[in-house]
Image (cartoon, rainbow over all chains, first blue to last red; front, side):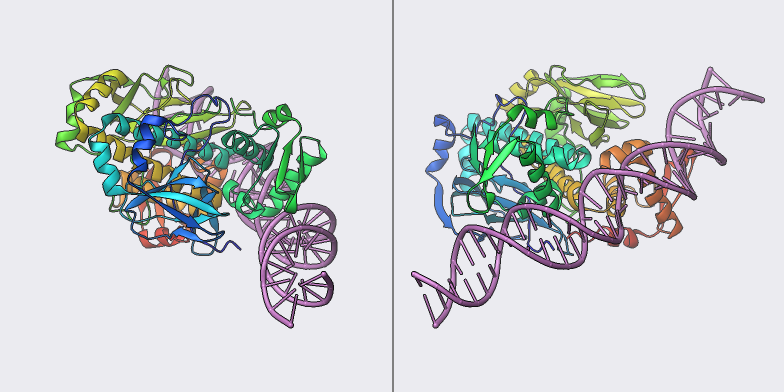
Length: 237
Length: 237
DNA sequence: CGCCAGTTTGACCAAGATCAACGCAAGTGG
DNA sequence: CCACTTGCGTTGATCTTGGTCAAACTGGCG
């Protein structure tokens, strides 16, 4: 089970409850990231391809233009954990360390912009405002990761899955329907569950009329009852 | 984020694999944090006292001078999760948001320095180097939190407890003996376990001669076999 | 001295993991 | 274009880790 690899990356995750506060860097704010575009290189990856591997030099970071990226961590015996999913607009691969502590892989057809750390750093040095925004985004990301810590440490399977659905709907700005690019396996490794449990929880949600699924391999999710979903993970204050 | 949960503190946690890299801000590096000391206010808290509460204005952040602080998140039904422990030298309460998403409480006798966000921000604005260090520390913290995410999502109880012991020994710079300031309950809520499970795992470690405990309420832990402990949580690459 | 908070241990229970089988959709090669 | 293969999703049966409940114990402190 769980063969793969992994590591840490960074990206802007989401916040279920107060969705108003979002990371500054996330979307296409004119005067911030656009500045970066000049120094970025555009790269394309196919489904399953590795963007960087565990142990690689961490001399650059990325921004997703198209597709979905997963940041994975592997334990020796094959247990895998997905630290995050990065969607278009999200950054990943920011690191304070010299080498990658995990891998980044393309979940589907992916296009990213790659920024060399050096170039980005010099840009930041001469633009304090940019620095501030980057810093703020990192703080947001930290907040999201800490939320995940709560989810993984103290929430039930049903709450995790409900929470996950709310997260992706929020992050993709979807209201009714959404295509999940990742497999059940990926979702399980993201939520600290097995794929069977994820499957069963989704089935339960369908049975209760909270969601419906369609499309090849049930990847298209239709949100039937958002309130019910929110209630499910609102043990949270 | 997500109602009621915690907030972000920051501190330098640890990384089992490459323990050499540590946060810059953590210890008393002359030309960095010392600059902050001028604008900080010293505060004292008694065991169990709240330093800030969930929902409070997040207009300041703190640095621990003495004692241990826990950052807690509560779910409605009482489930608690501890996002981190902050030891002397660690910062906590840094946040990108306006209000606290969790509470900070003194575990024992605590002394902190409190920095108003405004004052700190203006210091940072005129000192890019300071900004860079603060940013780097936040990236380190992010890496640590992501490590915790792996621990909570994919590690067994025994690995979590072993990992926890290594973490505190590392962070407190202890070689042989260490006083754990927090209760079994705190440890459990930090590791996503119950206090009984923590107790049993510690008992198992004592039985196997990996550690020994003494002192009031077994708070003093003596490390008998560091390698065995490391082996226990080295499914991790 | 006796209470109280925290720790330890045991017996039992359940959420979720594991194991197994099957079905369906997407590729793939002829 | 179709047979075959392979990967993914779903579901059921059973098992295990860690949780729950309960009781005893221990040291600190008023």
